[in-house]
Length: 503
Image (cartoon, rainbow, N blue to C red):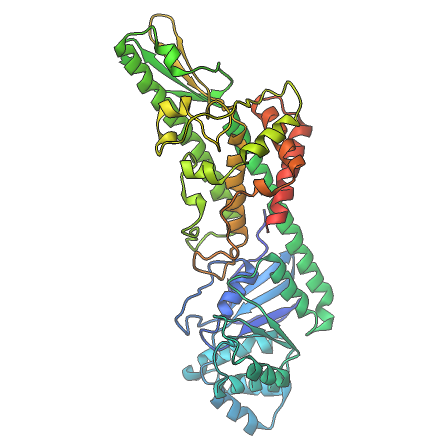
């Protein structure tokens, strides 16, 4: 995937015909958060300390080698009242006023920030003026807005609330109407992809001649976003195929554990451990149990590591590269994949699995045995429980198949996998979809672990029953290694449809 935005630091650059937008505002008003969210760039410095931005940083949007849009992060105003007083006394207007102001103050270190933020306007930039309207309107705010009115550039006011206090909004709106062409609310901490596009659409209203270029930029964003979704769907499909076909083998000698396990794809018989161990010695039973538990540990670790690799790829696709984004504390994704809580919260209900599997027809090979017994706290951590357990949320005889087979010259070989439990692919996919929702909906300007409308319940319990049946059927075909290109395309399309609904 080609990154749409490329950040560059520079002093100034003449506008080459594409829209140039300067993001301007008082220090600590959220302008860097707005720009970080719009550009999906978490390298933009965002914190609660005013004055962190000291130089302009430019973010061009490139499409087919052509820059179609450029955003500029600017320092905050430092001396707006003194600048305004000079402008009023100068007798100049518009570009002449702006150029004279820069000539007057550019070599004075006291006015360094002010000249930095005004320079893009001299280069032809329009203005996004970001303010936090949850605080009172001050004289310094009036001075900033009046400066922007006097230099007479296309301009839009963006209201970025830091909290939900709207008591001061009427005063701000009255001031905005005197100084700006367009007024728009934009929560940089919660804005998802549609809200970002809507803000770009609004920019057309402040400079009509930019409409063709802005349309190009918006089209580039939409195409890029769809490409990323498709890549996520394909990566999830590859992950499911790996997990559903995974087998682990562990060699056991007559005197104890003698081999280190290996992984591969294939199938093995379905068996309970107790019957297999009935005719062996106590020492051999202990060795077999040890090998079985170790093989199951390798099996779980291999799938968990592949899941983490998938999650890392999704983070990278959505450009969360610099800020250490963590999931909300209440997220079920903090639970281990094989934890009891995971299997209680995610996957389909017993009724949904039975109905979906019943509609798949005969010969599918899905185990539909009703679960027996309850779940112990350590169910997914011990080999014995994995082999023989079950619960109301866990349909099928076991999580995965275990076979212990004698080998020539003594000893035995433990084979774990592949899983035939119909819940297994559903839980894996549920976790992947939840992780995608958390990452793709997290605004880059939000440097906390708060995710808008975060949820922890199963995504797949709420999809249409026909889609549930289709998922189980295609997952079973994938697990058996019989999936055709058409089957893979159908499953990827199904996953893509759920990704589109989530964000």
